[in-house]
Length: 345
Image (cartoon, rainbow, N blue to C red; front, side, top):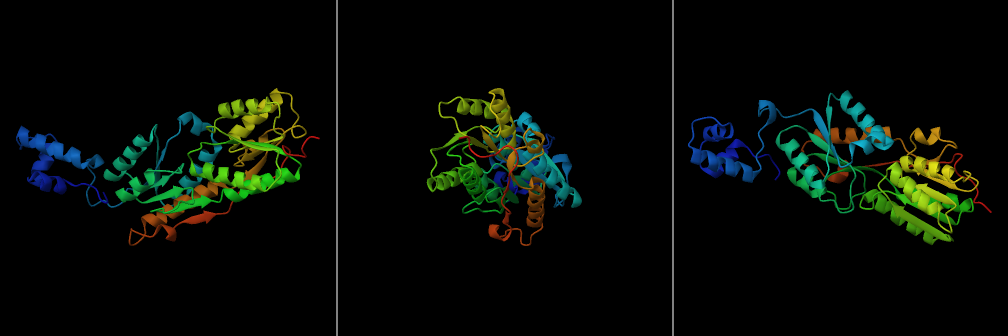
């Protein structure tokens, strides 16, 4: 559906006046119980949601942008990536007199319902779609609603709305070539959720790069980005008979947890094990030794996402080609620090 259902739509479908529909929907006298039941059934079937707070139909802008995150509140609270991303988004929105509505959801069905309700109730003018998946039904759902949206991540083949993204493949090549030059031949990677698009892009980039280098082993284990799973996977990797001499972590929370496990097992960093992290938050510089990391400005990334969405919301005509607003940001740059060194002899 490309527009919101109105009282007029329900009246036409039910064969009654708009006044009768208003009476029925608001529980007021003036219509028979049979007519009221018929109107309510049609309204439910058409997906009608009353405009909240009795806002006038003439209001064209909510001055608000929405984000629905399918993550646990606890994970978001300790994940520097989301804190920095939201900080950049909020700074740009505030400068444009826009607000930010953030909602945590548990399932994709809940998330889709949030988008439908936000758009039907005029609660948001657009949304930022995070955690883009390799097969993501949210993309068509949002496009079909006609809800202005920006995907935070990409590239997305055949996308019907724009994306703001970093190249995740080039940094993966940089990491493996760097570790190979240091003499590492047994490398492991503690990756993120496998259904996410950026994880799949990294998976393929590591596989392709490793195929051109003489590694003894290049192992990838997927996890959920939490410190708990990062520690569990690291402990398992370092307890194997041929443990890796270097481990790459797909976020800094898991990298810090992995460093703790290495210390717990008595390994010297980087003499016996090198560690590399993605997303160079302050966590990476507060550890001992400081973590080698892939550095990108996540706050600026969030700001760019918000800027592009505001441009899309104000675009004339509203229906624009996705490519006209899609932005590719500079890829992450490798920042070597004390956690990496030559492979042990």
